[in-house]
Image: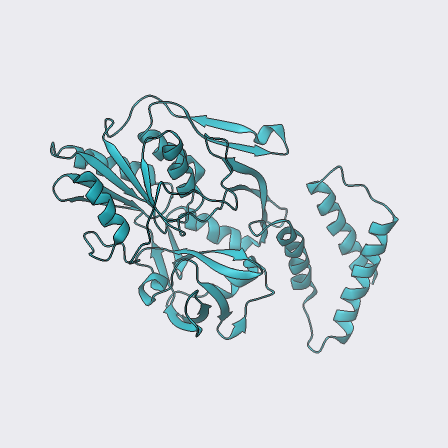
Length: 379
C-alpha cells in the first residue's frame, strides 16, 4: 500500500503540473486513498495477475483521455514510432484513427495502403481487433493492439453506416511509404493535384508538380484533391495554403496560455498565377486538410466541392517525459480566417456532392465530385 501511495502522489503532482491553479483539498486526498484501495484490491483479488506498471500507464492514459480523444500517453516505443510516421515512412495498416463515443473511428485510410486495398473506409467504426473488443479502451491502447511486425496479419471487425452486418478485414502489415503528392493533367486543360498527407516533404513535392504542369500553356485551372487526407504537419498546411494566396490570414490558434495565441499570414505570390482553383474534400479530410480548405474558402480563392470535413481542429503538443516517453496534450484550437473554429464542426463545402466512389482514380466515371469539378471548368 505504501508503494502505491507513493506512485499516486507522483501521479497527483503530474496532474498539478498540467494545471497549477489546481487546489488540493481533503476531497482530493480521499480520492487518492480510494484509488490506492482500488489498485490494492485489483492487485490482490483480480482473477489474473496484473502488471502494476501497466496499470499506472493505463491510469495516466485515463486522465488524458478524459480531457479529449487526442490527448494521450506515449511510451518511449510509441513516441519513436510516431516520429517515424511524420517522416513519411512507417510500418502498419495505413489508417488514421480517432475516437468517437468511446469507439475507434477511421478518419481515413491512406491511399494504396493495406487497409485501403482491402476496403476500409473513412467513417468505419473499429469494434474488434483480432477478436478483442475495442470499446472501453483508449485510443492509444487500441493503436497499440494494431501495431505489430511488418508482414504479420491482423483481423479488424468494423461497423459501417448503412450496412447491417459487421465487416471483417484481414490485413497484412506493411511498411507504409507515403507518396503524399500525385498529379496529372485532365482533359488537356486542368491540372490535378492529389495530396494524401501533410508530411515534411509535401510542400516541396507540390511545388515541383505544379511547376511541371505550369509549363503547359493550355492549363486554365487546378483541382486540389484533399479527400481522405487525415492531415499532418501544421507547417506544411501553412506553406501549401500560402502557395495559392497573395495575402491575408491563413489560420490562428487560441489556447489558455497567451503564448499559444498565434496567427499565420500569407506572403505575396500565387504559385498558379491566379488561375481558377477547386478543392475537393470529404469526411476523411481532417486537421491540416481543413486548414488549407478553410483558408482558401474564406478568402474566396477556391470553390470547395464534396462533403463536410471531419472536424479535427485542435493542436497537440508533444511534452517529453523523464522516461523518454511523452504526453500528447491539446494546448489550443485552430480558427479559420473567418474566426470560425474547425473543432467538432469541420469545413462545409460550397457545393455539397456525394462521392459516388471512394477510389479517387483520375477520370473515374463514378467519381461524382471530380466529374462535377471538371464540368465547372468546361462550362
